[in-house]
Every structure is written in structure tokens, then in C-alpha cells.
Length: 365
Ligand SMILES: Cc1cc2nc3c(=O)[nH]c(=O)nc-3n(C[C@H](O)[C@H](O)[C@H](O)COP(=O)(O)OP(=O)(O)OC[C@H]3O[C@@H](n4cnc5c(N)ncnc54)[C@H](O)[C@@H]3O)c2cc1C
Image 1 (cartoon, rainbow, N blue to C red):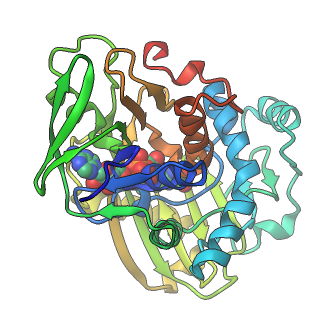
Image 2: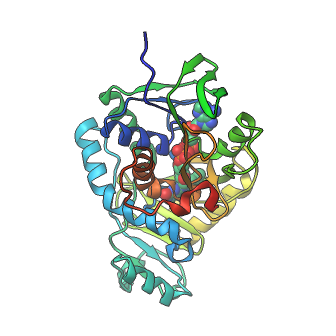
């Protein structure tokens, strides 16, 4: 007979996978169920810049998780590589931000949060075509290659013996005295002890469907489509990530270059559009003219788990005793992921938290 796990995680994106890893490391037994294939949604589609865009313009709650994740990433990435032989390609290639009308605020933020910054030298702009306005060079900022990070995390969980069930969709729950006793999936009924929803963009709808009687304490998460282009460049054609207004280029180690991204409120529609392709390619060709000679090899869309301020929900549900939520990371799930997983597990295991949990509570949004 299969033993009921201590924790059942619904949703196998980067947030669910990191949370499973953290729980396992704390001694819990974990099962992850995923309605499609693990890590193929937003967590696959993103860019992997490990800093929010213009973090000084974001909520303080985003900064707190970012700073904690920045501490965790180097050892997380090297441990994953050692344990799985699959490299998440954590790469501290630096981030060049070409235009900073709010440079004083930016520098204050960097100084306060001990993020090294410099005025970029002219050579950093070699091959780029833009009109800089108070440009800023953040040499320590890294990227992770999303699909590789996800692959590495999945392998790590497999190595650890964690049960991962793909193509298994949570459809319904049985609740008795404010406790979920079992869940209904397309693969049958599963008994549960504790649950975590890390269901990304689907969290808001899922919650309303499963708990129609709950009026307050609903995670308001909605899908926000982001489209990306991929160019087949050569290594070092672009050495660092470049943020130019609200779009960016990200060079991977093998020379591939991503151009992103759009921000579209279009329900659960993941269809790519010619308009977005034109907009992103025009941006990319203008900023880096040599890309015109570089094959454009892919174009995709992902659904970010959007929240109003971009602040995720990381909380135990106040009305359903054995339900927790770790979702709603919007544009920054890769960077906030490790700290969010740590905070979720600290809360569940009643350990002291490294980050103040208050802003992430359902009631705080
Ligand atoms: C174009 C784009 C660019 C981005 N760039 C960056 C960046 O540079 N840096 C950064 O930090 N972040 C970035 N992001 C954001 C980041 O990708 C997301 O915040 C992050 O992936 C969210 O992870 P998640 O696990 O919550 O969601 P997801 O990866 O979407 O995972 C949720 C999972 O839950 C599953 N699920 C849903 N409902 C059910 C159910 N009923 N039963 C079972 N499973 C279910 C889904 O199938 C899905 O696999 C970007 C996103 C996009 C789209």
C-alpha cells in the first residue's frame, strides 16, 4: 500500500519543484502532481534573469525574497550540478541597464542592498545600438537557463526518491471540518495529509472552483502572457544581459540569444502572434544590429502567474487547516523561487523565517 505523503504539492513548475526539494531536505515525504509535464509552463518559458527588472521600482516584498534568493542561488546551482550532472547554467554574466531616468533611486537601492554597480565603460556598448541615459552596469547579476534549471530540479527530485506524478490534474477536493481529506484527480482519488498549491497562473481559478464558499482569503492570480524570441547566435557574440527600456536580450552560454518579452492580459491563451514577433524582432535588430544575420529559431509564449503588485502568496490558508499556497510570482518566479520555497517550508514547519512572512499572507494582498 502506498503511504500517504506528509505533503502533496499541486503543480510542478519551478515553485513546486523547489518547494518539494526544500521539504525533502527538511525530512518530509513529498508527492508532486502535475497536470501536464513537469516544468513545461511559465517556468520553461521565462528568461531567467535573476533580478527583477528595475527592482527599485518594485514592492519591497519583492526585494526581500530577491535578496534571500541571491544568497541561495550559487550553492543551489552547484549542488544541483554535482547531484544531477545536469547544469542549470547559473551564469553571473552581468546586467547592463541602458536607460535609468531614476538613477539616484537605482543607486540608493543598489547601495542599500549591497548590489555592486558601476557606470559602464564604452566597450560594454560595442555592437549595441541605443541612446544611453544614465546607464548602469550590474556585474554580479546572474541568469539561470530556465529549461535546464527545471530539468536539473526534476532529476534531483527523482534521485531523492520523491514521487512525481505527471498528467495528473487536481479536479476536486473532499473537505471535512476545514481539512482536505482526499483529492480527486483524473488518475483517481489520492489521500492527503497537507497540501501546497503551487499552481502558477491557474491558482486563482482553481481556488474559486474548488472552494466556492470561501469569500475572503482567495489568491487573486491571473495569467499574463509573455512572448519570447530565440536567435541561434555564437558564443560571446553578446557577453551580458541587456535591459533597454522594457525589453531585454539574454545570451545563453551556447550563443543562443533570447529577446523578450511581451506583457499581455489574454486569459489562458498561449498562441504566439505576428504582432509580438514583429515587435520583439524589431527591438532586437535595433539594439543589436548583428542579430539581423542570426537565424531566428524559436518563438513561444508562457503564462506568468500575475498578481497586482507582483508579490506572491506564501501562506497557510487561514480557513482550511491543511492547505498552503506558494503562487503568484508574476515576472519574478525564477529569482524569488528559492527564497519562496524556503519561506513556505519555514512556515509549515514552524521554523524561524529568514524573510518576514507578513507581506505574502493572503490577508496582506
Ligand atoms: C516570457 C516570460 C519571461 C519571464 N522571465 C523571467 C525572468 O527573467 N526572471 C524571473 O525570475 N522570472 C521570469 N518569468 C516568470 C517566471 O517564469 C514565473 O514567475 C515562474 O515560472 C512561476 O513558476 P510557477 O511554478 O509558479 O508556475 P508554472 O511554471 O506555470 O507552474 C505551475 C504548474 O502548475 C500546474 N497546474 C496548474 N493547475 C493544476 C492542477 N489543477 N493540477 C495539477 N497541476 C496543475 C501547471 O500545469 C504548471 O506546470 C518569466 C515568465 C515568462 C512567461
